[in-house]
View 1: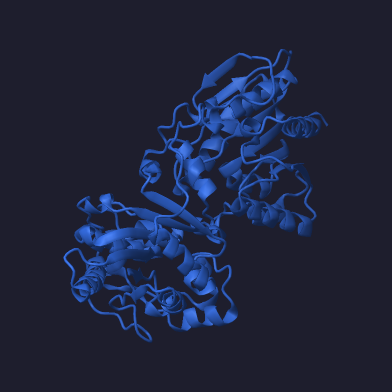
View 2: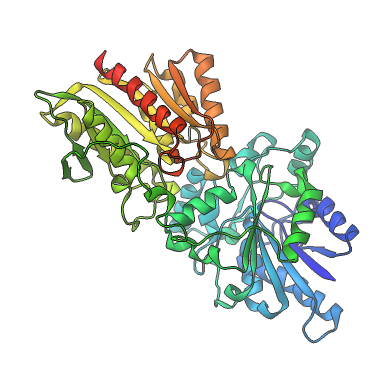
Amino acid sequence: MTVFILVPGMFTGTHVWRDTAASLTAAGARAHPVALTALDGPRGAAAAGTDLETHVEDVLAVIDAVVREDGTPDGPGIVLVGHDYGIHPALGAADRRARHIDRVVYLDSGMPQDGVPALAAVPDQELRAELAGRAAAGAGEATGELPPPARDEWGRWGSTEGLGDAALDRLTALAAPQPLGTLLQPLRLTGAVAEVPTTGVLCTGNGASIEMVQMMVGMGDPALRALVDPRVTFFELATGHWPMLSRPADLADVLLRAAAGEGHRLEPAGTAEPPAHLRPFLLEVPERPRERTGNVDLYLPEADGPRPAIVLVHGGPVPADARPEPRDWPTLTGYARYAAGNGMVGAVVAHRLHDLADYERAAADVAGAVERVRADPRVDASRVALWFFSGGGPLTADWLAGPPPWLRCLAATYPVMAPLPNWGMSGTRFHPARAVADSDGLPVVLTRAGLEMAEIAATVEEFLTAAKECGADVEVIDVPHGHHGFETVDPTDESREAVHRAMRSVLKHLQG
C-alpha cells in the first residue's frame, strides 16, 4: 500500500489536504498530512525559535512513525509530497531517510538546493528583498514571523485560479503566520536525496508548464540538467497554485499516477540537432556586414545618409553561459538582416536577463543600447522602432509608459505581456498590460502564435483587453498554426507571411 506524506506550504496546515487525502484514501492508499510546528491549528500560534530544521523534524517524525507502524525491514512505499515552501522540509527529511522514500513530488514548487534558504523561493520579489535586508541587519529577525495574507492578497503568493469564494474564505480563515526562521535558515542536504525518483506537478494557471520547462532545458541551463533523468516525471494541472483546494480529486489522481512511475519525461538538450532556437531562420535574407560594439550588433544597409533603425531585443531568462548567446541566434540575426535588406539599420541588443530578478538590469542594458544606436551617425535618431521577443515582453512596459517622440513603433513577437503569477513581479513596473494605458498613440505590432503556451497566451489576452479598453493602437498579426519561436520551429508559408506582414508594418511606421 502506497503511503503519501503531504507537507503543506506557506501559511497553511493539514486542513488544506483534507479533500485530497480523502480521495487518496478512497483509492486504497494511505495519506498523512504533516502538522508543521507553528503553522497548524486554528490560528497556528507561533512557537519561539521555529525554523526550517524544526519543520524537517516534523516531517521526519511522520516518516518514522509510518515506518514503525509498517513493521517490515524496508518499510512501506512512501511518496513524499511538498507543496510550495513545503518542499524544503520535505527534501530535508527525505535526504536523511532516503532509503524509505520511493518518490518526492514537487507540487508547484521550486527546486531547492543545498545551502539556500526558502526565502529564495518566495515569489514576491519586493518582499523577498525586504526580508533579506532585515535578515542581513540582524536584530533577531529570524525569530519573528510573517503575517498571513489578507483575503485579497493571496495573489502575491500564487495564482488563485480555480478557488471559489468558500475555498478562499477558508484558506484565509485558517492561515497562520509563517515563522521567519523557516525562510531564513539554509536547507542542508548531503546529496542522498538526489538518488530518489522525483515528479514535478506544474500548475499551468500559476505560470508553469511542461512545454516551458522543456524549452528552458533546451537552452542548455546547467541547473536543469537533472530534470532529464529518466527517473524524473512531470504532470500538469490546469489550475492555480493551490490544487489541493481547487482540484483535489484530480490532484489525488496525479499523485497516484506519479507513485506508479507515470508522467511525462523531458528530452535532453541536444537530442534534436540543432535545438529549436538554433535552427535556420525561415526566410532567405541577404548577408549583411555586422559591427559589434559592446552589447550592440549593427547590421547596416546599402544606403547613404542616416537611416531609421529597428532595435531587436531577445527574450529570456537565458543562462549567462549560453552559447551561442542570444544575439547570435538565427531568429535575431535573421530579422536584423531582413531590416538591413529593406534599407533600415538592424540592431541586435544583448542584455543580462539571466534570472527573473534581472529585469531591472536588463531594462538598463536595453535603454543604454538604444541610446548608443541613436547616437550612431548612420542612424536617423528621430525614427526608431523597438522589437521585443518572448520573455523580453515585460521590458516593453518602460517604452509603453510615456513613449519618447523618436519611438515610431513598438513590435512584440510571441511576447509575455504581463508577469506570470509565479514570477512574483505583479507589483513591479514590468507590466505591459498596465503600462499600455499610457502609450499615447504609440503604434504596437503584436505577432501572436496560435499554438502558444497557455500561460503566455493568457498574458497576451490580458494586454489586448487592456489595450482595447484604453483605445491603444495595436495591430495583431496571427500565426494560427505557429508555436512559440515559430521562425525556426514552424518554417511554413503561414509563418513566413506573418514575418513579412510584421516587418512591412514596422517599416511603414518608420517611413511615415
